[in-house]
Image (cartoon, rainbow, N blue to C red; front, side, top):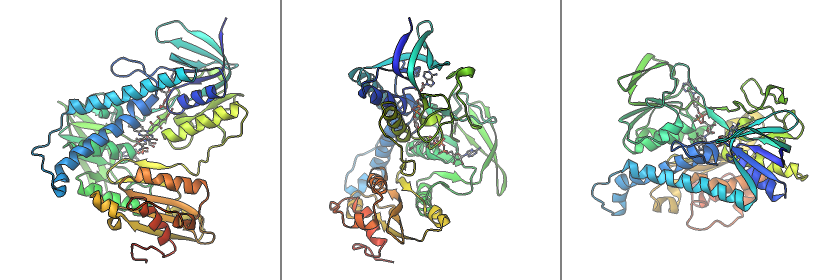
Length: 475
Ligand code: FAD
Ligand code: NAD
């Protein structure tokens, strides 16, 4: 007899494992299937985010930032250290340890919430039947009342720079280098290119990033992108815009990358080439042809606003469906779908999803950019406050950047908040809440912010929108 569940989730990344836990918390009998295998051969829950994405990248960003600051900033504080050395094996051991702890934590959460975590491959057949093939056993059929597909994404491969796992690599390999490449090339100055470029540049690599677009960080507010771009240049990141890569060839461990830009044909030689040009939805072997699931032209599973596929009681969430490929977006879709299955009202506010780039300075935003507001035709006002005028930022020796608030001229509603500077990824939380509650700049102006704190910069930027900044000249 086949096993029966109320909910079967395929994929235990941040979208799937959160959906499974939430469903079980509703009292639904739930299983979550995943086949992720790490480089040490061990299977682990947590998907890309915990094993090869968000978490390991932030571990390395922290280590490399501390190394960089010890070398370049400690002196200003009066601290002398002698020579500062980086032990790459030690740094990588810490990264692997954090990943192990957090992925093991999901297995613990599954147990505590009575989710059956099943290790192996899941495939949706017809009539909400799921074929589960354990990593060490024969396929079996599971009957589910509801199925949630959460199979995630995979890096995009360029036909002229195919991954070989050694010289031309994806972001996962670039997180696990066991030595500092003398020269590192990156194709794509997006989020991964900037984060991983920063890591290895801080450790001593000469990093060149080739970006096809003519505008730096085209998806960010122009003021923020301009501050960040100048600072990255000062840090030694060589970002070349309008660079159309045409080939990458490996000879004796040296990668020659050819590209065209406004000046003509160019080439660089690097020891490692990281290709970070975006990710594609991953749905290989996820559903049978007769399952009824449809994908769009780019391979995303087609869903409506509530993540329902065309098949009754089958949902899809996270990176394998439309929308930004972000862990927190997938997790919120997981919560929404589990709540809908339990018969509750639920929705995801797709207009209020924060973006954070964990470089130094950090970059974070929520809502519309100034260009988007301009385009909408709605009259607006802006207020900015530089971290150079923040006592806390000065004490931290991190004064680059600013907070920029954009609000409607008519009713003062906050439409977007853009931050480049220290702890931008933490500061954006207040702005996310403000947008979620449709707050006005006056709401933030009248809210007490602790002194001295970086959050005062958000307060002052909101005041500046009405030319009422108190610690900076109004313009
Ligand atoms: P995934 O995390 O990809 O998980 C999908 C899971 O499904 C995998 O474990 C896979 O093994 C499993 N699976 C797929 N098909 C099957 C099948 N048929 N049977 C069984 N199992 C299957 N996002 C952020 O928000 N913040 C960050 O700081 C951030 N940093 C990142 C850094 C890097 C280097 C990368 C690559 C990504 C980063 N992301 C970040 C993006 C984030 O990792 C993804 O948005 C997120 O992991 C998507 O979650 P998901 O659950 O949809 O998919
Ligand atoms: P991305 O979309 O952020 O950036 C890709 C960049 O590559 C773009 O700037 C694009 O113009 C450029 N590009 C594309 N094709 C090119 C080519 N042929 N030559 C040169 N440049 C080219 O994608 P990513 O950096 O690979 O990241 C993938 C996903 O992972 C993103 O959707 C991102 O949201 C997510 N992610 C998020 C975080 C975070 O939240 N901090 C961190 C890492 C990754």
